[in-house]
Length: 309
Image (cartoon, rainbow, N blue to C red; front, side, top):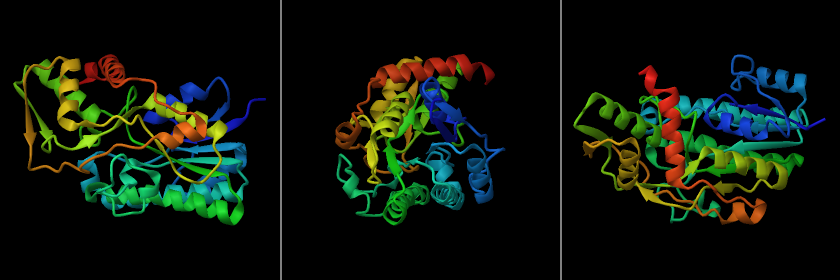
């Protein structure tokens, strides 16, 4: 019989990519949030006791873009901390063989030297607009190390950069930058608008990882990494928001003007990860080039979202 994996957040963006990848090789247990509320410790223990999976992959999270983080900082801090604490302690209590937790590039200090190295995680406070979320995710690193040191638990922590791809969230109230740009520009094109307004001045840089590549990294770590030391997952490619806007504009075919609203925050000035440890420790390198990934994302949007608007 194939080994069993319980995945929290399996119906989410990254979860769908991961389920597609693991489905042939593992028995997957995919409780919905209505069946297992990860913020409720009794729910978590009940489901883990009932199914007794060998592995747990914790993807469930409450997250959003800069605007959503500014409106809901306490909610993101509280819910993500609760989920992490519940999953880690339940996996310890029930003797789960391995737990993989997913962190966030938002956990890094605001002014981290580029490329970000795992050793720099604790050298400052995260960027203010998403610090509560970033700190909640950073706490998972401490938890994995603590449970490993005290109980010998095999808990690991992966830190992906901003992801994009099919199944992403295109709600402008809570989406991240790539799906937001795709939706804004597609809508403007469809409605014949002359301009699209973008938050910030375009100078901030980001690194983007196709979600299917992140799923591959999780599988490789599941099968070949057994340390609580956090590992960056990314591409190592840095791009400014201004350049990203031009790429999305070209793919969507929007011919109007781009207006940068400098009254809105840029977020963290730069983001780009040192991904050498992922390659060294379990052989991960991103495979999908950025332009290909953007095209896949836009094609999925056209087929699944745009006609509903």
